[in-house]
Image (cartoon, rainbow, N blue to C red; front, side, top):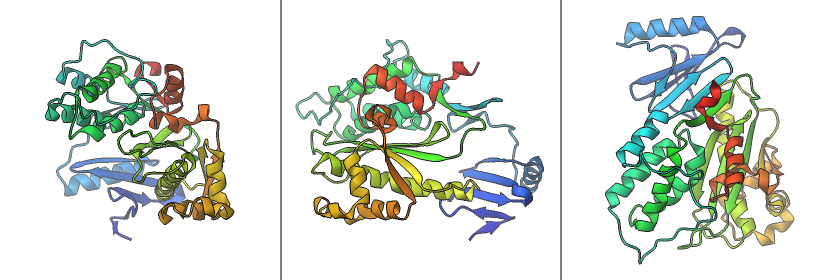
Amino acid sequence: MQTWAGFKKCPYEHTLFIKSGEGGKILIVCLYVDDLLFTGNDETMFSDFKNSMMVDFDMTDLGKMKYFIDIEVVQTTTGIFIGQKKYAQEILERFHMENCNPVRTPIEPGLKLSSDLDGERVDITYFKQIVGSLMHLTATRPDIMYVVCLISRYMERATELHLRIAKRVLRYLKGTTDFGIFYKKNGSLVLTGFTNSDYARDLDDRQSTSGQVFIIGSTAVSWASKKQQVVTLSTIEAEFIAAATSACQAIWLRRILEELHSYQDGPTVIHCDNSSTIKLSKNPVLHGRSKHIDVRYHFLRDLVTDKTIDLVYCRSKDQVADIMTKGLKLEAFEKLHGLLGVCSSSMLN
């Protein structure tokens, strides 16, 4: 284990360093190129660390974090809000959408995209710039994660259809530039997950889309939307692969939390809205229905057997990861992005 000045380098996240003191004291340092963030629970450790760093390096103490890599941070007595309002406004101005009419959802409900081979091609550089800018925004905006990942599949041959979807995301941003995530103070530190898939959503290769969300307390800390690498033969199989991918993420998050002295008691619950998938993860008798599935995905069964992961059924209307796999109607969309912890910064006042 690598150490420096009492710090231990986290083996699961190489930019993270932890220093432990007596009585549960902890100092956490995160590096990003030439910037450094630190937090913890002891003012003396803060002071000693800042003084030692300023002796060895030419550094400036900027005080409590307010802005970092286009992320705005508001620290209040009730929690911490992170957002990218300034960056979102810059995106709108860059692509001349600052005066557009806003919409309330980033993508039309149930919309399916294809390569649109007969469609009129658009400037590929311009399209890539929009997609790249939106990708950076997903750091604090899980509500646009699905549609941004969807349009990114067509960056090599974008058409008017794909550009229209991208501009709809910009129209959604127009009315939600001040949205971000609020992490409430003194909330639960229990990690829970949600996993979902949308079977054969891609019209070109019929691959499914996996979605996952992990929440600590009442707010999302990790989210992803990704096209699966294989073609599945059924909804159950697509859900099983999505659950296996989510389980791997859960293991990584558990290990990070352990390094931060936040130990998880018992298995991490991952919510799934497909009861057959849950049975498949627990009952080896069903092997005949799953023997063709890549062996790496059966890692999920071992985690369930070892009680590291507990796959639990939830109703589809409460499936938070649904927002990562498809376009939703307004009511469902607003409910789920609220469950993610997404809100307007004006709600802090």
